[in-house]
Length: 387
Image (cartoon, rainbow, N blue to C red):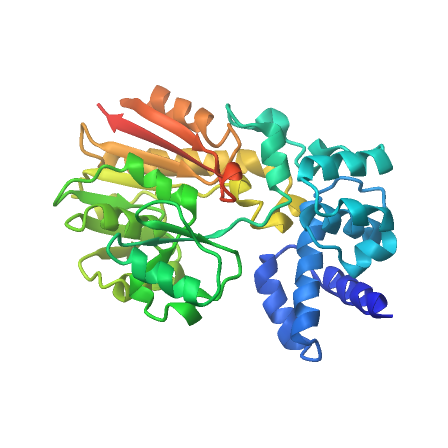
């Protein structure tokens, strides 16, 4: 039976994964090593493994296949062969709203608690709707792109011509289904940047001025650097990261975007960098701090499944140490933009409070950008002014 083929494929993928690599990277390697799997096999195996991890540690007492049947029912509006085989009573409910599906699972499995999927309620930043946030973990977030206002009609038209559903969220933002092969539709990479909706919204806190000198101190592959440049093309920019490979990716993205006027440096922000930066003074610093990534777990549910709570304290130490080492390079009256993609208050409001107590900083405003109502990630951002 075909369902047994699906079961075997899922069990083999699950047994091969230990959580050390991001799941999407692991699957690329796995499928290359198992070339006998056709496109349909790969698609179903990917769906099953992602659905499985979206259940977190809820119903942990059940066998893996039974958990998968429940998870795949909660995460999708069409019935899979495995759910139909193991959890057949779910068939008539599969297209219903998630609230009703959760209630149905609770009725069939009284020990099921949706809060067990994300058992960190006490650590959440203020203002989060826990129920809406938990339900969002069953849904794969959209693919968001940022474009120039003048290019948006053309790009949107091309996407629609390719038969892909696209939403125009602003003059510069489009939302597409996750997994869209955008590079095959819009071949000129200079016309758009892939960037989550909430990440784009952090730009409202930057407020760069022409010829300002800004430092993106944890630049990674340059998403925030490109964002600030789109807000003020005349801004001067230093992008740094501890990883040379990330800065290589940043340079490729900047060149593809037609931006040549920038500096990049490999800098370990946990060290004293006075010899490198002693004469630098910045008009603004972007600190997109290393964090748990809890606001992105709808996109990477394997991170939720394998997460251990003690790691939050480790990230907080890292965030405080980095912030302490960059504030001194900020000009008086200028902003430090502190950001995380976390929903934990220890990494967000509590780090901000620590910085306010330790340094001559004034909080202008801060926000937990709630992506869970928009099929997007959630992000925290604070604008702090040096006194």
